[in-house]
Image (cartoon, rainbow, N blue to C red):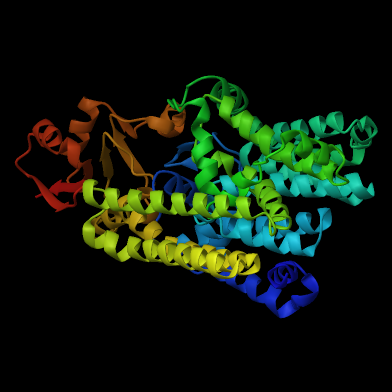
Length: 561
C-alpha cells in the first residue's frame, strides 16, 4: 500500500513546483542548443540546406533558391529565409544553420506538453514533454539542418490549434490552424495540407461530428493561408515558368507515387524507425497494447469519456504512418511527426500502469532488449566497419554503452527490490536525458566522416581570385558553403540536373573534352577527386604537371605543379 501511495504521488502536480519545471526546461534548452556549432555539416542534406540560404544572402535574391549557382526547386523557401537571417545575425557557421531546426524541436516539446495538459492534466503534459524531448530520433533530427523538424513543428502546431478550436470553438485557434498549415506549406510543400486535413476529416467522421468540419471552413482562415503562401509561389513562378511542373508534379506526385528518387524501402520500413525513434520509452508504448481481455479493453475504450481524445491522437499517428509507408519514397526523418502523439499516449499510459505488474515487467524487458541491440550494433560497427575507428568508438560510443548498461541495471534493481513505479519513471527520465547527451559525441564522429570541411579548408589556403574549383564525378554539398565559391562539376549531375539545364548552369558542367581543356588552360584550377576515382582521374589527366597536393581516406586534391 505504501508503494502505491508513492506511485500516485509521482503524478500529482501539486507536489511539483515551478522550479522543477523550469529546471527541466533549461535542461532541454541546453541539450538542444549547446552542441550545434561543435561539429561540421553532415552531407548531403546539411551542406545543401546551408548553401542555399548562403547564396540567397550573397546574391540578395530571396525569391529563387539557388544551389551551387543553379536553380533548385525541390523545396519551398521558408527555412532558407530563416536560416539566412540567422546567418546574417550569427555569421555563416554551423550554429547559425542548425539553430532553426533546434528551435522548432524545442517548440515541438512545448506544444506536445501543452496539448497533453489541455487534453488530460498537467502531470500528463509534463511527462509527455520529457518523453518527446528525450526520444532518440527526435533529438537526432532536431540537431540537424534538415527540413523535417520544421515541418513536424508546423504539423504539430496545426493539430494542437485545431484541437483547441474543437473544444472551445474560438476563432483565434482556427486562424492559427490555417496559418500553421501555410507555414508548413512554405517549409515542405503540400504535405502540410494533405496530412492535417486527412486527420481532421477522419476525426470528424469517426466521432460523427460533421458540424465541426463545417465550422472549420473559414473564409478569414483561407485568406490568412493565401496571404502567407501565395506571394512567394506567385513570384517564383513568375520568374521561373518551369517551377510549377517541377515542384508540384515532379516533387509531389511523382516523388510519392514512383521511385523517381531511387528509394526502394519496403512497406514496413518505418516500423523499426518508430521502435528506435521513441527509445528509451518504446517498452511502455508496446505494453500499452497488451491486454488479457481484448473485449473488455475495447468496452472500456468506447465507454471512456476521453475516447475522442484517444481517437484524435491515434488518427494523428496512424494516418501519417500509413501515408508515408505507402509512398515509394521513404526516409527515416519523414516519421518524426508521429512521435508527438506517441509521447502523449505513452505519458497517459504511464498514469494507469503503476499497479499493473505484468505490463511493467514487459516494458522493462523490452527496453532492456532494445538497449542490448543498440550496444551490440555499436560494437559490431566498431569492429567490422571502416566508417569509424576503434579509438573513435571508444571515445564516442563508450558513454552510450555505460549509460544504457547502468540505467537498466538500476531500473531492474529498483523494481525488484522496492516495486516503486515512481522511482522507475524518474530513473527512466534521468537516463533518457543522459542518453540524449551521450549521443552528441556520436553525431560528432559521424559528421567527421560525412563532411567536406577538411578538404574545403585546404582549398581555402590555395584559392585565389582566379581559382576554379572542379569536382570530379562527384559533388560535395558543403564545399561551396565552406569555400564561398561555386564549384564546376565534371561528369556528375545528381539533384543539380534540373538546374544544369538552365542558363545558370552553362559552362559549369563539363563533359570529358571540356574538362580536359579547362584543366590544361587554367593553371590555377583545383581538382577535388573521390578516392575511388583516383587512378582513373590521373590516367584521364595524363599530365605530369598534375600533383596530389592533399589526400584523405575519401578525397584528394590535385593541383598544377
